[in-house]
Image 1 (tube, helix red, strand yellow):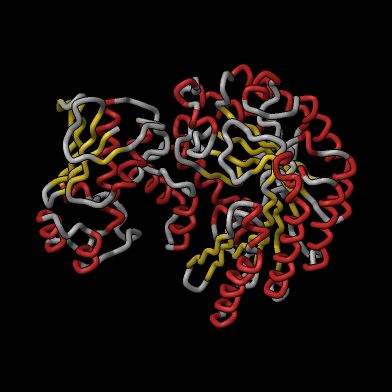
Image 2 (cartoon, rainbow, N blue to C red):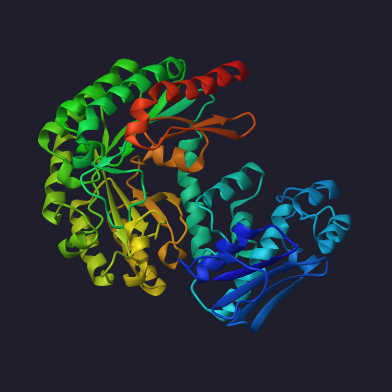
Amino acid sequence: MYCIINAHGYINETQCISQIFFPNEKFIIVSEPQPEGVTLLSSLSCEKITARIYENGKFVLEEVLPFPQALGENAKTRFLPQTSNDTAAKFLPQYSREAQALSETATPAFSKKAVCNAIQKSVFYACMKYRPAKAPWGLLVGIRPTKIVHEMWESGFTTDEIKRYLTEFYLASDDKANLCVTVAEAEKRILRQNTHNSVSLYIGVPFCVSRCLYCSFSSYILKRYEKYIDAYVAALVKELTAASAYISGKSLQTIYIGGGTPTSLTASQLEVLLGAVNKCFDISSLSEYTVEAGRPDTLNDDKLNVLKANGVSRVCVNPQTLNNETLVKIGRSHSAADFYSAYNSAVKTGLNVNVDIILGLPGETEREVKYTLDELTKLSPDNLTVHTLAVKRASALKEQLENAELTDAACVNEMLSLSDAAAREMNLFPYYMYRQKNMLGNYENVGYCKKGKEGIYNIQIIEEKQTIVAVGAGAATKHYDSGRNLIRRVYNVKTPEEYINRIDEMIERKNKLYEFDSEHS
């Protein structure tokens, strides 16, 4: 898809809206309508905001919003960030005569957020006319829509006002606005337990027995990297030891060991890693200690016993589907029977179990999804996370997109309805949610749980209201400054080899952050 941007700098924001209607298409900025394909023009002037569609170089339709109305006589300006004329001039392109005039005539209600919203609305309406589609989230394309709810509560808005804001300002459907608020209410019960001193710990183990079709994580095939694993675990232990000096003065709420698939390690390697965690940190008062065991074929009784003996309270055992034919298609090296065995063994060991499934997998219809849900209902897990398939840039699915038959939006919507009904039948309620680019039908991922079984780390990582110290290859530490509501990030290198060779550098990066925190706490 081609795009012309005229007199504004909201390129990414325009692209995000257009991709609701033109998913997985390359977005190319041009200066004039192209002779082949679809060209979108997005234009801003002091009189109006325009979105125009061209097909094979010829004008098809346009959507025009008068500028004052576009900025929201109905928008909640009490919540929108206010900007002066000087601030407006900074973010509007200086090369545009219209933009300069606009900055000179800006009113007190003028804000960057309102201009962006109006530009996105014009694009949304024009694309909807040209290619009608279900767009239940409207303009809400970010991964954390519940953040808006929390911010508005903190600003004194009522729940009804927030729902109206989500539907009017962002064009979300009533169902999605209600879901957003429901999830935020569940999160609030966890987030109110946060203190300025509370932290969580993430440990990354980026190895997997095989790479799934849809996967874009920093994950490395176990057999190819076997010679690095002991050295990698040793580097992890070294970084954990360094992090313990900082965390020892904090209240450690959760530990999450993710990947990859951490249980692709041997029982003895897990013992070394978990033993180091116990040596470095006081885990006696943890609210939650989770290990990803996402591939059922990586679990056995020895590993489960190691997890339990070292204080782990929760595991994720993820079939993604219980249809064996689909498991082969997506590159999983296990069967449905392997999942049942791993799940039952984990429950028998006394661990809380989360189960992940993915909606819209290649070749699956509502019938296959219903079968998976019916089977899971018999098990009644503590947690069920329902993902909508996303076509991620670094995945094999993206590379094979031309030959892939993706599930349409109407079918995904029905699958989501089936999963929600099944969750309710299992007495599970939605407690966290996030969204991604290029999700089928522009839908969402929802975590469901039984009362009191919330995945606390999931909430903390999504809402970003707590410092998360992250160790391992590809890990990103997030330091949360509650006083200023700011996050500082420190990234580790991605590959296991680099991580092993540069572990001292990774430790030093974090030490600078820890020193900054100590000086400003």
